[in-house]
Image (cartoon, rainbow, N blue to C red; front, side, top):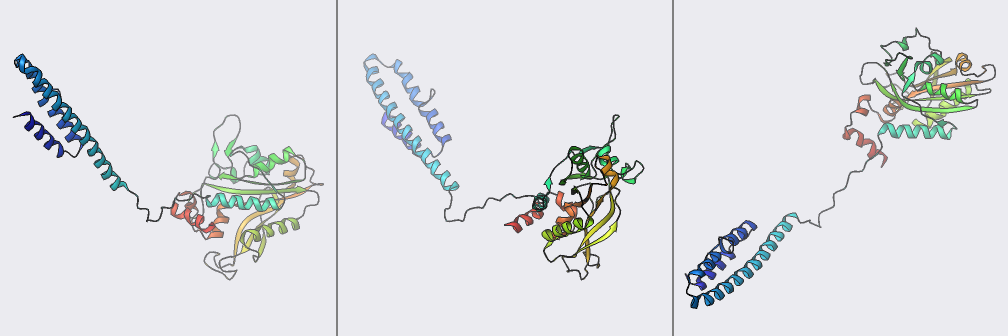
Amino acid sequence: MSDEATIRAALARLETVHDEAGLAAWHRDVLGRRGSLSEALRTLGSLPESERRQAGQRLNTLKAELEAAFAARQEAVRAELLDHRLAGEGVDVTLPGRRHPLGGLHPLTAMIREVTDIWAHLGFQTVEGPEVELAKYSFDMLNIPKDHPARDVWDTIHIESDAAEITLRPHTSPMQVRIMLQQQPPVRVVVPGRVYRYEAQDATHEWHFHQLEGLAVDRHITMADLRGTLAEFARQIFGAERKVRFRCDYFPFVEPGVDMSIDCPFCSGKGCRICKYSGWIEILGAGMVHPNVLRWVGYDPDVYSGWAFGMGFERLTMLKYGVNDIRAFFSNDLRFLGQFQRARL
């Protein structure tokens, strides 16, 4: 085959190449070390000297033309591949943009902030305490004797220790004791935090939940102060139209003790399934601080008096938003959690 026919055949083949693999194969077969052009250059040595010079010049010219054609085709193929990729990855600017999901506060976190903000406006400081607590603060200094059922291993989660009786705190009241040991009256604090109970889980009970306890100690504090303050708190959370009811109850660290209920916000006190047709829903327990507790922290009960209360954040949130299963708060189900985010937007 003549040189002219060789270059025409090689160029014709090059025009049919449309990918990187084809370019590599063409370069190997034509310009590579074992390609047809290299084979032709190696035959120059067998030519007579009078023909060798002219044949070498001709093959070098052919090589230059083929290399130039290869470079041009390589650039064209890469451009074609880029255009094809861009066509597949292109963005249709006429389509609406995709909204990025917005994060939000967990409903319990939002309720904790709302409640502590209300108590801040009522003059109470928010403090936090340890979740692993000495029984001295969890029970002894709260007038809970060693034979009280609350100290049983079937009610409180104990931590093994040879030095002292240690538990995961069953309530946030121990921090009230710590505060009173650190300062003299007046005292006005609320203590939010996670607490732990050794009990079976169901729609209304969890082995861990969030609680708020409050304490006010000063001269001349009475039950009327307790009632008025808690009634105002209930109306701040559940609406100004809410009615409150106090009934006698027993807690070891208060005397007298009461529970506070609100008229059912779902039926306005008429009676429904949620309030068990009573018209009332209990939301917290409270009472006047027991004189023994005041003595153990160094307060004179003849000079100072005070009241305390405790409530669960899960219960408040369930009542306010109509949640019927406490376990939903800890399921991490975004379908459930997203409802609260949309409600606050």
